[in-house]
Length: 212
Image (cartoon, rainbow, N blue to C red; front, side, top):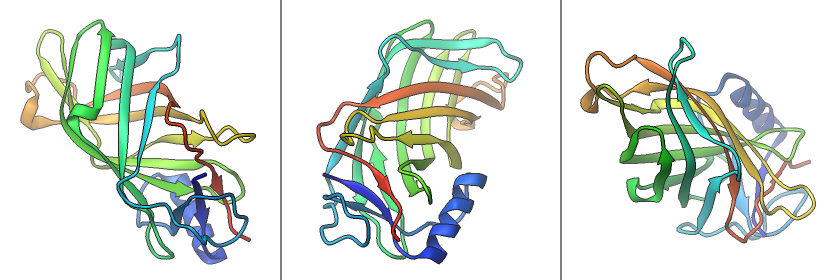
């Protein structure tokens, strides 16, 4: 099984601060293959993947800051490829290609133009992880083409594992995304709010565990 684990009390405090402010320098999080309470004797290999899909019966929704719905999708999936399994001085990083971030049954035409990266930071005192993102360009076509993404970095949401099995954890996204000027009409709002809840569909456990 894979686990997210903090190394060192000082670094764990820094990770807690990261979870609070949603941005900043990398924290010491590692991805392990077994359920350890301290250290990590078997760090998860780079290039492994984890897949997620929208929680059944929920919607991925994009709002203006004034509360007007720009887009609503009944289906969405993404696949993360681990590019840095983390260490005592780095955090876990994963990439998502444009082809691996999909949308379906949307009220507006929704297309992923470019992929991006996710970082996972273990939250001290819990099994959860805070997730930050950068990059991405997703176009929503209403009156014009409006593309939004994470830019140079945003706090995306919180990953909460299934504490009994480590499988089927959820990523709750509630964040403000930024207009991508390269792919957007000038009349598009500069920011929009993205709300979505994804569940893990891959079959290897993920759990954030703080080291003692």
